[in-house]
Structures are given as structure tokens and as C-alpha cells.
Length: 125
Image 1 (cartoon, helix red, strand yellow):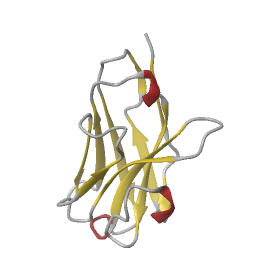
Image 2 (image 1 turned 90 degrees about the vertical axis):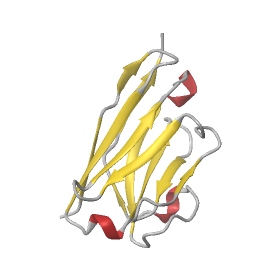
Image 3 (image 1 turned 180 degrees about the horizontal axis):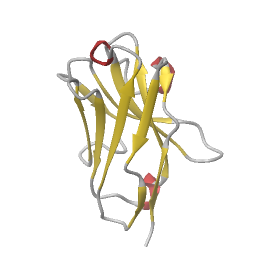
Image 4 (image 1 turned 45 degrees about the horizontal axis):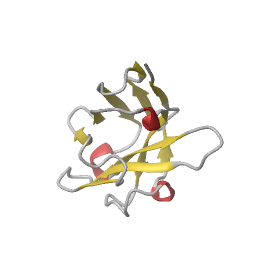
């Protein structure tokens, strides 16, 4: 059974930092591209970042470029998102997802085959 379990979300003040983690199981993690997608209630999902199966190539949405860093540890089957200089516009449910292709087709949400349940990030003073 494929499982993607996110953790690390929470409440943080503007300008603060968080690190999200996504533990994967039930599939060959290092064959898949992995990504982070976020969604605010009533709005469409927004692709945040994607990382190739090897970790060599990463992509970011313009809204997070320079503030967020995606990484992966294939030995631990874990995906990470380091988020710095957070602002209220970053408030959303954050989902990790896996793409069978192994390569990132931009950061869009439609490329992914498996999804986690999400972790809430709230940026507020």
C-alpha cells in the first residue's frame, strides 16, 4: 500500500521558518519525482516545488523561489521542504506527492500519481 505521510506543519509568525517532511512507503521511492503542492480552501491547488528522482534538479513556483528549498533522502525515503521567511500568503494545507515519471513536468499538480493527506501551515502573528 502506497503511503505518503506529511509532518512538520504548524503555526509560525511571519518571517519564521518551518521544515516539512514526507515519509514514503509502499513504492520504489527513488524512481519517482516528488513534489509539494498547497491548497487554500476555496482556491485551486498550487504547485510549490518538484524534485527529480535523483535530486539533481529542482523546480520552484515563482511565489516561493529563494525562500523554499526542496530536498530528498532516498535512503530514508523522505522528502523535505525547508520554508524560510514565511508570510501569511503561505498559509495553506501542504501536500506531498509522487510522480511515476521520475522527472518534473514543471511544478503543476496534475503530474502526480500518489498524494499524502496533508499538513497545515499557518503563518500569523
